[in-house]
Image (cartoon, rainbow, N blue to C red; front, side):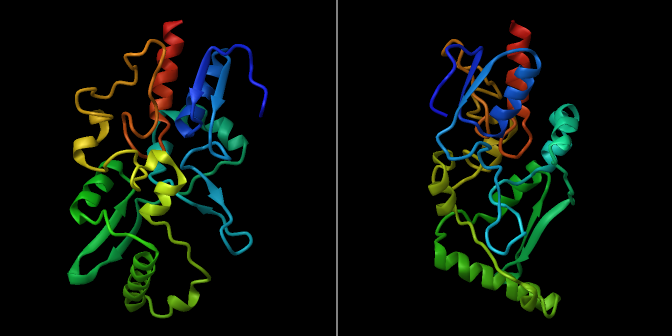
Length: 236
């Protein structure tokens, strides 16, 4: 798009999923909106792509979608999204891996539990392509011990490292998709910093923050977009 509207009630700098959620609420309330996005496609970390084998679609980066499905945004916007073809099939645990030394890494769908698991593992640095491939080999080998023949069923694999995340978007910083540390010190109402405690309004009049860096933190929930949209609608 090269032409921009002469006026918009609300302007979004960035078109991640929270901005899209907020825009949907505002449009439904009769407001005009304009979204600016530097990436080729809107949606932020929520992107579906055919990475290799034809017909196989992958969610490339986002996680914790049950936080969205179980929240108010899906309850309110879900019927419209379903009409556009969105369907969710979820399970309580996303994945799990056996690690050297008898350790196990479990990825639950609950955001708080996932943040605690990341802190417990403490593996945040040193990822490059070779490390990622070696780790994937190790995970597959461990799984093979419990599911014989699994390796022969793998058609292809695509690995995403923290460096890949950092290259994809400046919001990832050094490679954290959560726009900040996935630690209890930056969880939920502690975002973006404890002194701000869950606020979305900034000191700049008319400027608000939404997204993973704000309450309730990383996860596909749309909660911050909904909260800001409701506040803007109520203020009119």
